[in-house]
Image 1: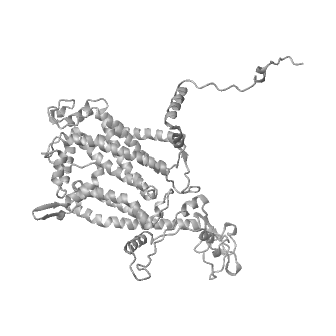
Image 2: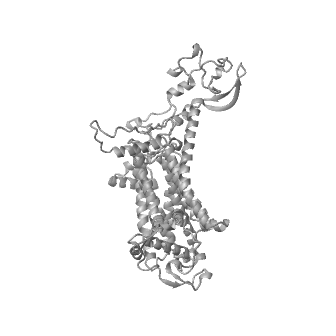
Image 3: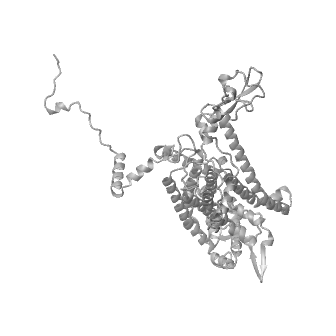
Length: 600
């Protein structure tokens, strides 16, 4: 007999029911309430949920673009701090601050305020350093990110617009950098402005008017610093932030590219979701970039304006150099021959200054921005591409990229021809002429060498797929012959080596119709065929399944079905000239020398 009592009534029927969870209280409840209130009025929950579930591939090279984005954030934060104390004015004052060597010196308000930020504002110098180093990091990360995009073919459809945005961002970044380091009005920045005024005057017809308009009168004037300040802190940053936002939105819309591999196609993305994986990684990486930038800024001095003094047009500053990202334009200016300055009808046309100083930058960036459309026209490829190319599998494109880098590098080093002459005790004329010759010879040579290297790497990949990897293990047959055992590649590794497409040159049709009349567009088609031949005439096709089956002698392909005199073929494990055998048949007798063998 049970001694326990059973409650009676309806309450007894629900005595063992699970208790409902207590309502969330505290900050989470408040945050949930606020989120619900915002979603009821904006409907933002659904797109945010979609965004947080967005999958991104994982590869170290994708972090280059993130470095550029985080550097931009650092620039905006540090630049906002500096605007509190910087005075964008060319008004004349007498310095009486903390830096004793400059006390009593007449200078502009811009230079004095920069000195005050460096010596009198708590933390001002480190913020100035962070701002300058972040600017350099921003520019170089954009450039390296563009190299990755170009060499892997990530600019192809549907990302042509994003590539154009990237080229504009890169060009605006160097213009913004020039405007930024011209603001302090020290001797170095003033020399740069003086050079910029000369560049403007080299413009045909309107040069002198343009310089007078920009500087608000004769150089140096008092209007250029306030105008540069507006351009530096308002106009160009607004454009850069807008373009950067559009760039990120298009990345979300098009989905991120990924490197080829098993399971990765143009229809999917293999990686990790934004939340929580990439949110955590991005947050941590931002602080790493910020920390490294702050560490460099604390240990390495950059732009010590107190050593230069205020700008004065009278000192001769022949040893002055621009920041590194303007070096290629300065080098082009130094290499331009003097005979390109033309004189006719009493007028002077300074092409030796106008072309390298003003025309070079927009032309180079214009060519870079137009390249995706040129390649798409040559190949006739209108498909979407979400898988990246291995640079070796696009030898012509890779060669063009290396050729551009060599061209840029020669111009960059030419900007220091005077310093090279001083340090090495050489003639500056000989150095300049050497750079001129290299500028014409080295880029085409770099293109040819790079293309040959890419084709050689493709042949190596092809041989690796067909014959496997050398193991270093030697096997001796019963006849006394020696063979090295080759280890076949795994399917995952093999897929990466054979997945790319084999482009072939376009075939040129007849230039006239059936009636002998010249077809419209025949000249354009002939040009396209020549460019296609230039791109794809030299190529190494990837291994096909039939070739792989024949090389391994698996008996499934026409090439490997029959053996001479009914004898079995050797499986591709042992490699010795044209003979290959399987491990399980390592000591079986080979055909006698002189006997025929089937073609693989």
